[in-house]
Amino acid sequence: MARPKILVIHGPNLQLLGSRQPEWYGRKDLAAIDRQLRQLAAARGADVTIVQSNHEGKIVELIGGAGRSYQALLINPAAYTHTSVAIRDAIEAAGIPAVEVHLSNIYAREPFRHQSLIAPVCRGQISGLGDTSYRLGLEAAIELAQASRAPSRPVRRKKNVA
Ligand code: DQA
Image (cartoon, rainbow, N blue to C red; front, side):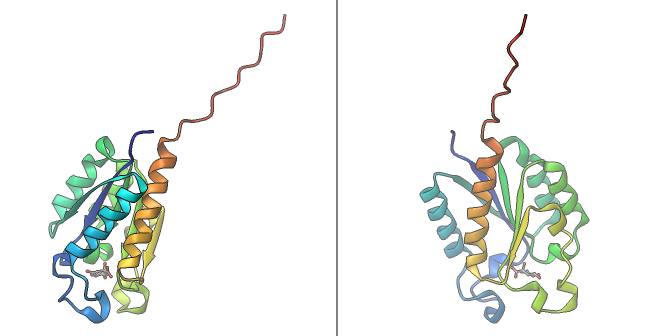
C-alpha cells in the first residue's frame, strides 16, 4: 500500500507556542511539535504536510483541496474551533477523515471555549494533553487514512447453478 498522506493544520496564534500562555500551552514551540510529528510519521511509514495559518479563508481553501491529495486531516483549529462554520463546512465537504486536537483542555477553560463547531464533523477529538494531543491525534489520523485506503473485500459471486 502506498504511504498514507496526512495534512496537518495549525490554526491562528499557534506560531506563538513556546512563549504564549505556557500555563495552558506548554513551553514547546511549534517547530519542536512539528519535528515530533515528522519523526512519528516517518516511523509509521506516513507522509505529513504541515501548515500553520492565521487566516480562516486560507484554512478553508487548504481543506477544500485536501481530498485530492491526502487521506486524513489532523487539525488544531485554535480560536476558529469556537467560531468557524466555514471550517466546519469545509471539513464536512472534504470527504476525508479528520481528527481535532487541542493542547489545552478546552472544557476546563472559559465557557466560550466549551463548544467546538468542528467536533461534530471530525471522527474524534483529543483535548488537554499538551503536545501528546498532537501525537495521539497523528496516530489516529494515520490509522484512519490506512483504513480508508484498505482494499474492500472482494464480492463473492454465487456460482451459476444450472
Ligand atoms: C487551543 C484552544 C483554543 O481555545 C485556543 O483559542 C487556541 C488553542 C488549544 O490547542 O488548546 O488558540 O486550540
